[in-house]
Image (tube, rainbow over all chains, first blue to last red; front, side, top):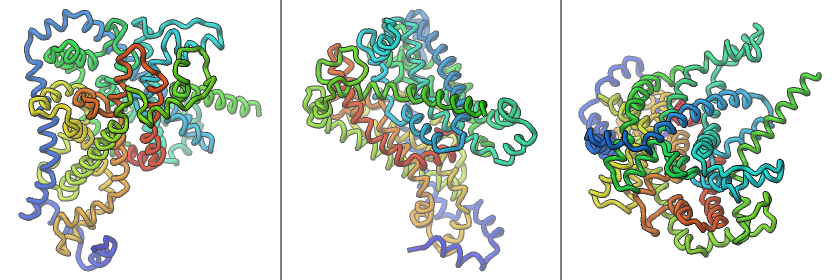
Length: 305
Length: 279
């Protein structure tokens, strides 16, 4: 059995390491090169078979122009576009803004903050399907928890939240915010923690506290992370299937579908897979620029965090 | 002095709002699961006559919706374990070859992984389903495992590459000088040193597979091959859903990931920071 520590200790004093490593790094010797290739091949195979091939197959399925004529004429598709835009605009921004504020709250020292954080991450820890089903039933007009509470506390007869397009869509957006704010709060909290203590101390000495400190010190340092998180969250939300499916089910009368759920509906409920692929592909003008920007940003993200 | 009190009152108020906000849907789940059958359609907001009838029903498969519950639970577990294993295996092998052995064109592979990470999985569901059908793999857990491994491995590769930077490359080089072959370095040096990252990524992959719904719904349709989330969604298909059983199932299904989450919380947080924003 080779012990790591002893390997280093025994070998280190004997050779000039800089020169040795430099000469070894660039060029792998024959047998080693074969091993390196053998190590990479399984993942490359998985990528080609289960990612690249479906992408190409999907593009082929959705390549007929007549599909898009049919799609754009569909009133359900038209309302889905509106829903998707609203879901993106409100879901991403409200969530990220709350996460930004709350990450500041969780920077507070003390035991109470830690306890609060444990409670606060619950929505993220519990599986999506469980919580979205619970929210669906909570919003039931007659027997739901929300309307029961409203009636008990304020004697208000709440509406049937899921029977109206706008309250149903609002419910989906709120459910999404509820589910994902904790995750992005943790990310931004990690970003805030990474700001060196000296910077914060110096800023405080110079009088940059409270809002001033946030605007001039904290936010500029967090801005890049905030931007990447927003972009990433946009793309995650665009692909989100579960919140809509379980909270509103796309209803009432297919009025709250988004592109991701409409694609699946067209493909499997109305048995028109090509139309489903076209619905999803129609998001590409938004997806492709996002992917390009994110690929560039994520390459440098580690260094700047 | 008064400013400090104001501050504390603010914290207390915000805490109260956060507690109610975070726990309301979870409380609702517990509340309904404790209702005796038929009592679901009432207007109270705390369990009047708490009953564990529904949990008993889940554990003993005592309702026709739950006739295959443990089989489905085992399916979820099997898929989760396989996805974890293969994501760790492929992730470590690939990151070892790219970051430690510096194989030529390794950046192409990392870019492929990055691209996979930023494509929404649900957008590929339709062609993926068609391909699996063509291969005769519909209703086969391995089709789901393949999809989830393909989507979980990129994150594994990032985190491993990132974490590997903290391990000096000289460790590998000295082992090479001592005559260790690449598989020996991988097994005896790389894997042991990567243990914390393995735990973080393993937890991520397990939870990803356990919580995933769309691919499992599309690819697993028979009662005996489906997983718990798919079975849960089946409850919704009828108007007369036994809501107390449904919520009890939702809670039993949520227990393993919540327990894992709180047990490995620190490690997962480490994973989040290591991977930057790559959640």
